[in-house]
Amino acid sequence: MRSIHKDLIKKLGMRSRMVLMSIKPVYADRILSGEKKFEFRRQCFGEDVKRVEIYSSYPVQRIVGYFTVKAIYRDTPEKIWDLCKEFAGIDLTSYTAYFNNRNIAYSIAIGAVRAYPVPRLLSEYHARPPQSYCYIC
Image (cartoon, rainbow, N blue to C red; front, side, top):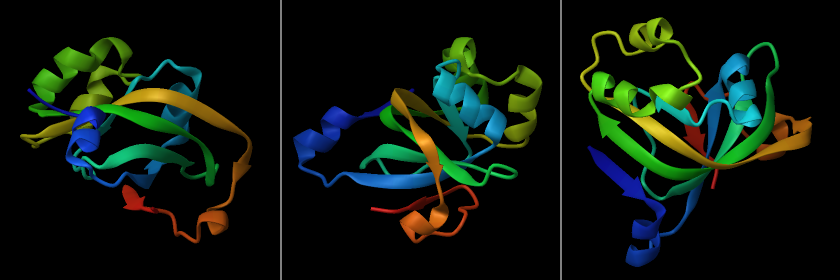
C-alpha cells in the first residue's frame, strides 16, 4: 500500500497547496465531529496538498471548515476498506456502491480539523462549487 506523507513534501522542498473539496453534508458533519477520519475518493489531488477546505454541498452550500492531510493511501477498494473501516464514517454498502467497478481507491487520512464558527460563502474564495475538488492555492 502506498502512503504519501507530508514529510516527503518538506524533504523535497515542494510547495504546499490547498484544495476546496465538495463533501455531502452528512459526511462533512462526521468529519467535523471527529467520527470520520478518512475521506474516500476515486481520483485524488497531488501529494503537495496539505489542507482541504470542506465545502458542504447541497443543501448547505457553504465552506464549513477545513482539515489537514495526514497521509494519502492508494490501493484496491477492498484493501482501503480493510485499512480504514473503523473510522470510515460510511457504511460498507455505500462505500461499495461508490467504488463500483473501480480498481483503485484513494483514502485521505484526516489530520487536524477546524470548523468555522460561521460557514463561509464560495464567493470568499472566488470559486465555483467543485464537482469533486479544485485547487485554490
